[in-house]
Amino acid sequence: MGTREQEIVEAARKLFREKGYYATTMQDIADAVGLQKASLYHYIKSKEALLLRIAGETMRLFHAELDRIEASGGSKREQLAAAIRAHVRIVTEHLETLTILFRESHALPPEHGEKVRAETRRYTRRLTQLIADGVAAGEFKPVDPGAACLAILGACNWIYRWYAPDGRLSPDDIAEAFVRVFMDGLARAGEVEAAGREHRAAGNARTTGGDGEGTWA
Image (cartoon, rainbow, N blue to C red; front, side):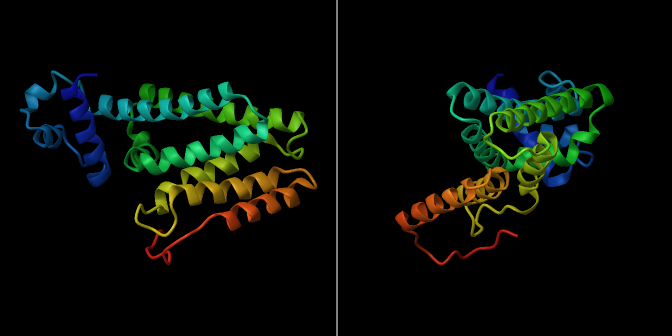
């Protein structure tokens, strides 16, 4: 993607979040990048094409992280914890993009919307399979993998509604809280107590500062 084209995508990303997809016009985008509206069409065919590109880029981030985690090996428990951390990091680092994806993707024409939904379903299947493999390996309780996956995704995706970059919880704080909640919930008998001891030991080893000022919800 050329520099000018990327500039247009970034301008659209910002406008879609600030004004909403429907309220943003191609003229708004052209003005934001200093182009005539007619010249804008040299780079981008339509507003729908911009939204599809933004949504596609976002889903590629999630799949790339899962690829990396799966390639790194480790137990299914370790991989799922890493996947939760990665998901939280992507949402908090790309808050503007995720807000658009969750709030505006329904605005895509049916054929384009289906492409985004297909990638979302593929990501959900991959996480579900990871949990299923952990259950089969005896690393997790015998829970329904699909339900567990949806619980994790529901919590992680909802971050975009309440997270504030200047709030009292950092992305790492949120990720570790989620990992603790879900890993303890999936852990077999005896593992929760051991995990709790490890968590307390890690907490005692850390030094923290400040009084946690700021709001995040």
